[in-house]
Amino acid sequence: MTLQQATRLLDDHQYPTDTERLVADHGDHELDLPNGSETLGDVFERVGQETYDSPREAREAMYCALSSKAVGRRHYSDRDPTTLGTAGPGQVSF
Image (cartoon, one colour):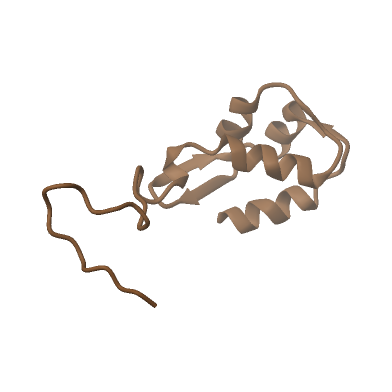
């Protein structure tokens, strides 16, 4: 399932709820991430025991607890300057 599908799943859950209930109800759903996959159970177990009063709180907890598998290229930024000693693209002024 995509993160967008997981977000909709959390939006449809009954609130207030807690981590234990989310893991019991949705923990076996597998998230397809750029560098692999993990279950919602794995994600929410990283959060610890919390109570969520709204879908927004649950979504924020999910996004904060995603592993590095959810990150494209780690330590990459297209805004970083070219490494010293290498030839990079020329600077363009707009």
